[in-house]
Structures are given as structure tokens and as C-alpha cells.
Length: 154
Image 1 (cartoon, rainbow, N blue to C red):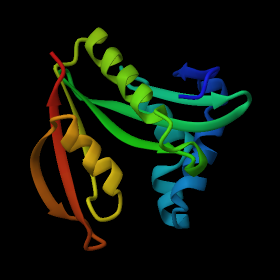
Image 2: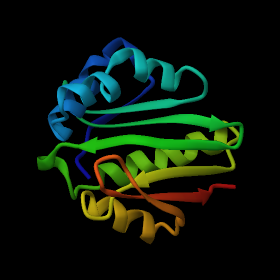
Image 3: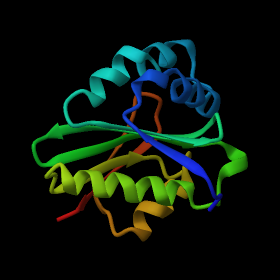
Image 4: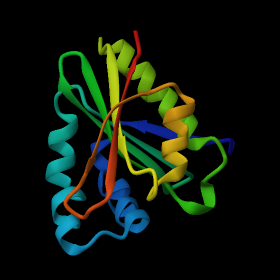
């Protein structure tokens, strides 16, 4: 892990930084940018027990995670990203641990996460290693197989 990283929790004063980072990492189409990478949507996701974690190396936003409440028992890990040059340094692991701590403190009983085995093999391997249970697989509108996972946190 890189020393002196700053993990900011629900710092909406700088929400543009993780939004810009999400676009840089995922390079979405204009349609997906408007749908998934916009300030209004992200603020709505975190307003009721959701969480936005932004990770900084000095003033540079290098990673983020955004999660939202799907019901009183469940926190959904919706969108996460780490800049390529910072991957493999334990940043996602630390961010994930903070999400779990937050979920427990907020009274959630489980977390969910969706990923794509072919598109994001590292995330798929991570959820398998972390003993998430596969609850369903389905094709999205682009014909990609989406895997939906759940894990009890307490």
C-alpha cells in the first residue's frame, strides 16, 4: 500500500474528482456517461445511507467506490475504479474493507455486487475469493453476461 493516501468518505465538495476519474477509467459512451457518470445520480445514490469513498494521492484522485442502499438490509457496491498505475497496491482491498466497516456500522446485513467475468476478471476473482455467493447470472442489453453476488456482513 502506498503511504499517505487519503480516503475521503462522502466528500461531495469534490464529487467531480471521482466522477472525472470514473469516466477516465471506464471511457463510457456519451449515453452511459449521462446515465451512470453524472453528479445528480451519484448524489441520489449516497443520500440515504449510501457511501462514496474517494482515494487521493496528494491532490490526485486515484480511486473511488460508490455504494447505495437497496433496502434496509442491503448495501450495493455499484461502481468502483482504481487508476491503472495504482492497481495491485492494495487500494481496492482497503477501500473494500472500509465499505464493509461502513455497512456494519449502518446496520446492513449483506452487501451485493454485480460484475462481468470476461470484462472485469480481477473483480470477478476478488468476489469469489471473498466468499460472495453467486445469486444469478443474466445477459445485459449488450449481450454481456452479468454475475450478481451477495455476501453477509453480520
